[in-house]
Length: 109
Image 1 (cartoon, rainbow, N blue to C red):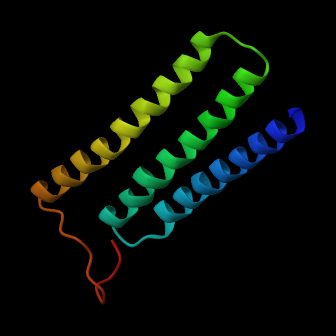
Image 2: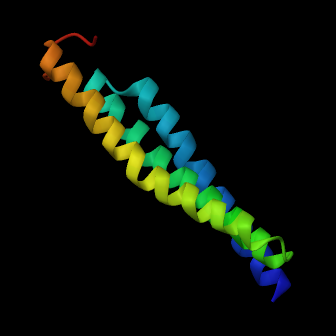
């Protein structure tokens, strides 16, 4: 059982790293503000959730306090709610301010 949990933690850490790296690449490579916010909001949220799931398994495996596990669960719930809402608010504020979406054929901004 110990080896299975170790492998599961490594898989979760690897997937979290993959989604965090793809978020960084997406922010650098996408052409405009709106498309750059998509990986910043979605991939980062999933990456943090996978990291927290790995930490939760480690906390429960080594019998740490349930308060620490509860904090991890609350952190995941907060990220799950706050990140998409923040990205939506930032996008709406940019649109109201007059920043128009990029269209194919236009130079990148």
